[in-house]
Image (cartoon, rainbow, N blue to C red):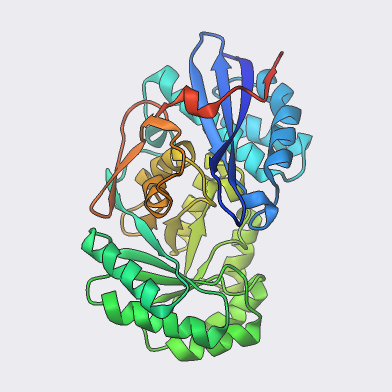
Length: 365
């Protein structure tokens, strides 16, 4: 079976002073009329490679490749997209997710069933802790545990000593009720700054997430760190994870489909990470319910003993109540800090077409 049309949408999920959340949605239509959706958000190029315009241009350029391939050839399609365009992983991720949604709907199977099978129906959701002061962040964390969350990602990255004080405040407030706390610096520090921070939080039962940009820096830190190291943005594909394992740079990995090129490649990273004994965390750079529905299907396929937690669009809506919803029904319902994953066909989500707006382009037009 072939794809008859590819449709691309662009929609602003949230308007805010420091920059809008502008996401890209891909719809694919099979010869029999079945449709599938995928989504990718880049944060305007300051977080991962690409920005909304480049994602959409890459989707348009890749559309002939998609239309030329059989729906049930995910490996062949991904190889062909990589040959056609180097990089541009968010665009490939949106296309790849749309095809997995489509395959599941045609076969009457969940994407999780097709990506390796359901290993679990419910997974812990991670709650981000972001604030200007130690007191504000501690209050956010306490609200999280009182809402049922047990897994937390504390955002740091400014002055290392000030960041450490925030982590201590959060830790003191919730550690007796939390199962997992990671300190995420998003590559903002030099090796020296990361060492300063590590010295200040070394006795806490937390993870240290991607403080520096390069794997060699993470490996250097891991050699002296008494707490587990979590690698995130440094992993864009299997070769990066092989390098990470060779360098012994991390104890755990955060896999984001939009950053690595889609669910097909994310599942390969899942398998290698689990085989190597790494703990796995699943996230996305952001986006609406379509992106997170794919992520949650992947979470269902992970070994329960290896998966730490996964992200949910519902936590974004809690931080930003005015954020646009792309779904009539979500692929994973958030209840008391846990995501209950849908077994419905495809990504398990019903898309709100009105929220997508008018198409940017249709191929063939």
